[in-house]
Length: 335
Image 1: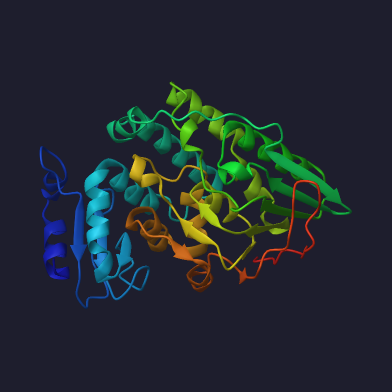
Image 2: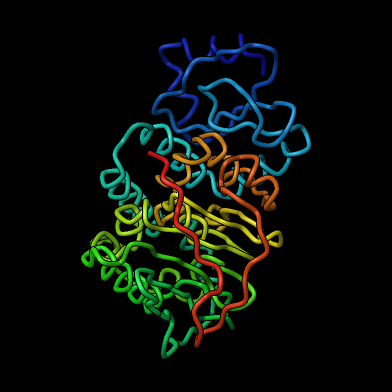
């Protein structure tokens, strides 16, 4: 619809009726030349501005900006999981300007609520995967003032399990309390930095409320934020979901040219739940975060550099579980 039609619709005091009931509106596509459109506020609808390209410029009140070639993909994504899509859009609007700890609590609560919802339950009911824990899912090596932390589930592209999460949490906690650790370097061993949550373990806890409390207590996101000015993350290969969500807390991310980035959680009825709704908007803005989370596309390292998602693109040094990385550089402070 045109900007005038959109603004007229939102000006209707009964506009909320369009977004409830038996056949609610969940997605509004807006195009045109207007620089400003009304904010949807807390209304459960995704406002997509159709601009010249994916993640391009658009009115600040829109939830995301995509190119004409992306429209069908966005429509399909919202039609498949309308509750998660609108929840993500409203959450990102609400979290603008919120401090990190409060934002993490809001994200975890919404994530847990969606785990109890029909979209995630439908996905979970079709799964039969089984995962096994590894002996050393996280490797830590200290060299002088630097703590090297390596994710070590290469056979699963370092997908996040409870064991990996807890191992990473413990390694980061050490760096937080030990002032003699001046630098922290985070990497992934194998073909990918981190492919997000291990799908075989998703939703295995039957009580989402207890999972919410555990997530608040054991999530690495809070510690990554505390360490941000001492932290450099080197990413490569598949850097998806929780992988880029956690990395985005660092002041410096260096991406291998083969890196790809996406937020695939919406497809299973969830939102990013490893801190990404807080870390990513601080790097690339709310609209580009929503473009990744709802737009259904991945981006390459060059685009990530253009967006400010990473600070540099450089081939990764060789590293394995029994050696410290060759390259170590002091993280860049951003303020």
